[in-house]
Length: 171
Image 1: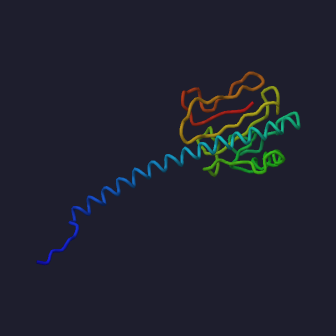
Image 2 (image 1 turned 90 degrees about the vertical axis):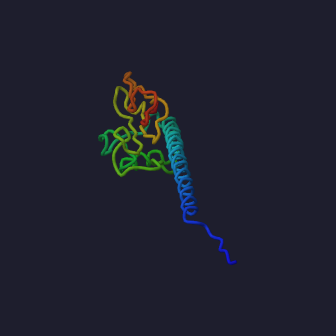
Image 3 (image 1 turned 45 degrees about the vertical axis):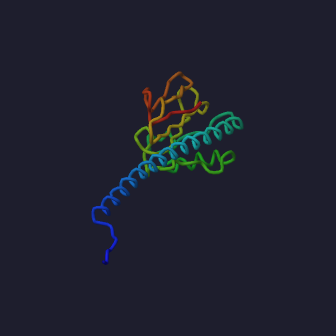
């Protein structure tokens, strides 16, 4: 008797289906980890910028001026255009390279849905004596802390919800 040992078509299809299911589960888990990692990187980048801004303030008695952005308006500096280079130059003694969003969009600002960083330090009663940074997380995490300008105006571009994507921080 000559018997051949082989898998049946049904057995092969079941194995392929199981492998496909496992691959999709792993893919979702890896993508979720990537999103979380980018959000952690964003927060770390913002902390670096804040530290550099404080060092600049200690040395100069004012925060560097913002301005020149295409979005949201020319009073801002935005990491998606040349206005960020001006801020980079001002902060160069304290931070060798000014960070960008890990998944930066070509244009736009965080309050409008773009992945970018935005900086503002002008107006509201005490130009360059306060600042705000606005950035966007991929996963909503907690409330937007907001910033209060010198005249008492509160800026909270992420809104007052319990979980927001857009964060407004500063001093």
